Image (cartoon, rainbow, N blue to C red; front, side):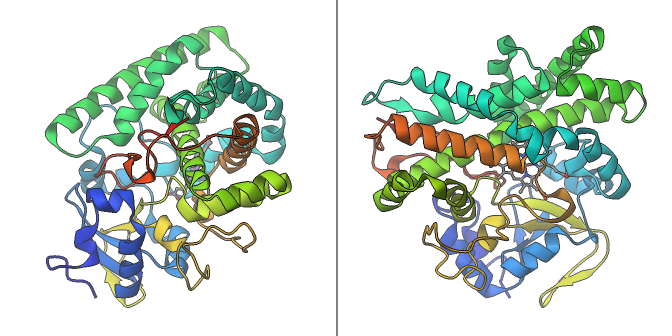
Length: 404
Ligand code: HEM
């Protein structure tokens, strides 16, 4: 068992070193207990789960709720007490409500529907890469990693081109700020702007009745299958989840491949390995990795740890995906390994809705980038490439990726 106050792996969490490389800490946490008590920067006590079998079970455990509105104190600690509600959507609900909200958009993300988007995703990829000159330093996150998924999800939803830069900026503020007063204010302001923008966009969709995804959600709203707050929150979830994670997967993958010329050469020589390579990079250092929260609706046990009713449980997907009990030699990138069952897209009822889309985007992005830029390399030593902020543990991604 880990001591919260003393020197322990838990005390290393949420530091700049941890953001750069959380894996040594996660290895020690896995060894120290099945669920370790932590006090995260939001100040709410939580238990962090790091072993693969425990994490997989916790992700699908109905006693661990995603309905953050049902745990108001915890909700406010994490998301703030804002008058704007953008979180009343499937990822924050359980049971019948979750099924209802997910079903409304599920069809748009089936592997077949996603496959039909392939030519368009390829065309967007080509257009973005046309603007990058080989050998000239560029921040690949700003020039390619984020613009690709944001363009794809905005086209799917029907967000006009003129608004996309604002949406991306506000989303980044919501996702990447800390818990101090100034950050909270910036975050609430960005949420307010996003809310205003979405309400206005929905009004326009209502008048126009387009055939995009947001248009079909508006029709569902008007048929009474979801309420106005759920409509705005669902639009926000799709917009946000549709680009923030995929952008980071592309960034993390390029970063790790550029440091492993043997793996990159393998991929170039055998393009059929691409799907397996993307799965392995998701397992090895995927984006949605550090914390997905649930709260206990009743007292339960994880391993030898009793989790009291009402406690937050933080499932560290990153730690689970490097558990040597499930993935031998877990710190090695190996395209030949059996990585099925990795938790990079979650598990259970909340398994990522956009997994097929994310996989396709990442495969096209990596294949096209490395084919078109055979000499691509990091523009600075890897230790100087900045990772995202030190406090928010939810996403693992690069703030910038300087390449030439
Ligand atoms: C859920 C990861 C891309 C939409 C999730 C969850 C994970 C995840 C781990 C489960 C969260 C939990 O159980 O608490 C990722 C990763 C992505 C990615 C690593 C990219 C590499 C996308 C894309 C979309 C998307 C492109 C497009 C719309 C969603 C939605 C949920 C979700 C709507 C909630 C599902 C539910 O609650 O039933 N994602 N995601 N994701 N993801 Fe993704």
